[in-house]
Image (cartoon, rainbow, N blue to C red; front, side, top):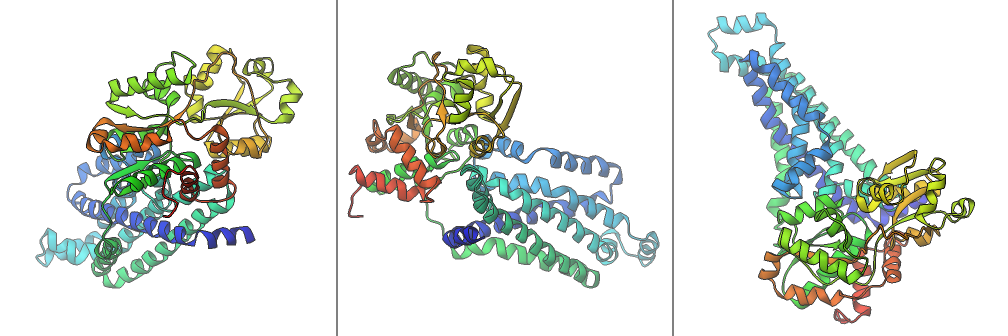
Length: 510
């Protein structure tokens, strides 16, 4: 409990910021869902033959995994709040639409007949009789939708939309740090409970006030959503630097930002923690971000969908550079020294028990071991697919998981073998053994800035500025910086600034 209190105190500012973002995204998504679903539900009560098919479509939208919806929207809308709000709105439609339709249809036919007898037309009957009676049912649908939206909003952090999911993802990335996960999860749950209580109050009021309570609720929600835009003018950014989930991409992105702002008047924004390679690369292609640190091996295997023609780091870089330029019209600037290649790792005790020195040694005990691989490694040729082909290894038990929890799974004995990155801090913390790769399955993975050529044409000074990191940062130094972020809880920006100062790349008088 004391650790949690300490984390809460240290991250109070970040918690308030992400909580406010979470509230904004949730309320805006709910507001849009209401404005779509309620009128549509009312219209369907007048055209009942098409009601069930349309309600069925909204039900199908809710069955699609939220992560899949976000991934689908990125190529069209980029990253950030817009695709997140669209996805969340789709998730919130069904309860509101169904309850709006059911609430009106369920009004006592005798009351409808009486209204018709009084000479009311369809609109008057709806506004004066049906809506006031149906409002509690409609409000119940809005409450259900709100709980769904608030819970699902946590995943929006994967595409740079912000919210409490940032803290949860950070906790997962740091080896399932329970305090960070709880710091994001508890406020999300409390937010859902508080909003549910507020909406329950409007539901009770609606029994007396009818449609007026609905209008008041919409006005309050709209004010909460729009107030920050009225009072806070956001500063325009000239460039946006992105990064995958993890301490290393965040450190490098902060270095790029500091270097660019040191030598230019450009205002640089950051969008780190964007999840997996595919998300970040899609964001770069569609212009949501302008630069991000990528690895030479990843560019060849994942983006160019081929194999490295050499095991020499410089030749691999040249292959990646020319390939990205020709296929995607992108520039790959000078790589840094460290090689964050894939590795197959295990504990010192297990390596000694089974006499494991190379990846090939796993073949003799593949039936006795459980492998814990990331989804990305499991699906890549320079990963488990290649291990099966090159080393003829097929584990009976393979468990896929997020990168941030595999080391804990290994330390707790839940898995025996994991894929690892050579510069990750837990390699030192857990004293892991990496198995040799005599067949050179894993190509060099040197980090380098990747950007579109159009960005470089608009800001040609970026090449010289970012190339200052070319050939710098050793494996040992990168591991140390990752360790400071992951285990000493220093911010990526502080670690990045300290390194740049120590190398004389930014002014020490800043």
